[in-house]
Length: 113
Length: 112
Image (cartoon, rainbow over all chains, first blue to last red):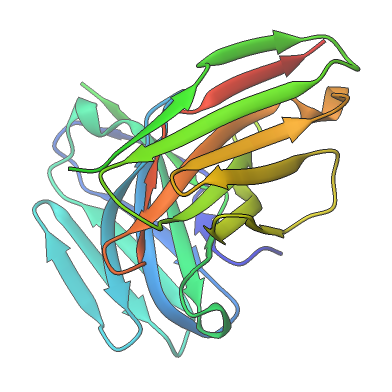
């Protein structure tokens, strides 16, 4: 399986609910990042968490990283219809000094109004 | 501020025809540049990356090639397109201390 696998593949929630997406990876990393992609558009960087960090917040986003389990989670609180998009985790591997990112398959989030 | 331009937005090409997709970055110098491909509903596959003029690294063997003739220009090419080359192509540059990727708007390529 690929470095950076998101779970679930698809998630449908109601506006106001929280959305949690998970990412697992296989190799040692420098950092892990989350990106968002609206349909047919380029990806937009959301948040970066370094290998020595365990939790990070940015607005309604909360990211956790567990290097012992090689996993991360992205929590979007108080979701809005505008949060509907695909979300990807990406890992910067230790051996490539962060110059290359490997992306997972993504989670398609649908927030229903 | 830095911006990245990628064109065209959509492209329909017959099998066997050549391809040239161009990407340019403004507002930064000597960026790391990347070409990714994305199949429908899937993640991104890294095709090529470049750390400088004339320096190209290929991640997967394929029908495509890349060139970097100028510091802020990255071109994806093919001499003869295959059906399997269809997909969404994304150019990106790495900013913020070489940690975060900034993407172009993508090119949807359909090979028929």
